[in-house]
Length: 331
View (cartoon, rainbow, N blue to C red):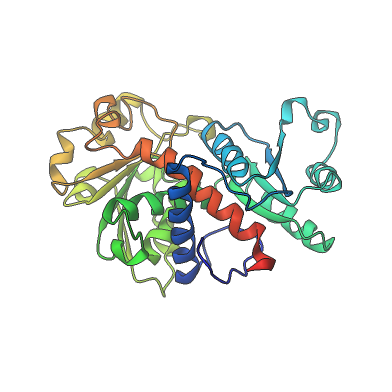
C-alpha cells in the first residue's frame, strides 16, 4: 500500500485538488487494482468501520461500485433508499444523516439531485465534531469527483499500466462531447484533466455549452480548455473522446430540436473518429443513450472503447478514496 500523508477530511469537489493529491489517488488506486486482480480481492483496511451509502438520487453504477469498494476494504455497509425512508414522513436530510451517525457511520457517501447537499452534511458533521468523513458521489449540476478520478485513472493506466501518473496526460487532446450544461461529470473532469496538463475540448450545441465554461479553468492549471459548437474541431487529432448522455430528465425546456438532429450533428460515429488520432480511445460515464451520443458498435468495440475499463477501474479508485479519507488520521 502507498505510504503518504493525506490531510483532506472530505472529498466534495476537485476544484481545489492539488497535484500531490491526484498523484496519491492514482498510486493508491493502482495498488488496489493489483489487489482486485489477485485471488483474495479483499483487504482489512477499513475493518470495523461503517460506510453509509446515502443515495437520494437513483444510481446503478456509482452506488454498486461504492458498495463493492467498501466491502473489498472489509467495511460494514449501510445502504440508504429514499423510497422506503422516513424522508417520506417529513424527516429532513440532516436528520437522516444524524440517524446514520447515531448508528455508528464513519464514512458517508452522498448522492443528491440538488447541488450542495454533501457540503451541507459535511459542515454539520464537522460542527458536531463527529469525525465522520463525507464523499460526494454526485450532487446536482455541481461535481462528481469519484467519476472524474476513475476517468483519470483509466486514462493514465492506458498510457502506462504499471505506473499511472498525472504527467502522462500533458499535451494530450481530450474531447468531451454531449450535454455539457447538465453534466457534473464534465465539470469535475475539466478540473482534473487541465490539472494534468491536458488540452480539453468541449463540443455541444450552443444551448448545452455556454461560454461561461471557459472560466472554469484554474489559472494555475497547466492545461487548456476550448469550446466548440461544432463537432469536427473538437475531434481533430483527439487522443481520447468522452461522450456524455443527453440528460433529458434535467431539461426543463427544449435545448435541442430533436434527438435525431442532435445525433446527426454531434453523435460520435466510426466515420467521425477518422478525424481523431489513429490510436484514439472512447470513454462514456454511463448510462448511455445508444445510437444518440455514440453508436453501439463503438461502445462495444474492445479496441476503441474504455467503457468497461471505466466500470472496473471505478471499484479500485473508490477503494482508494474510501481508504484515504477513512484512514486520514492514521496517515
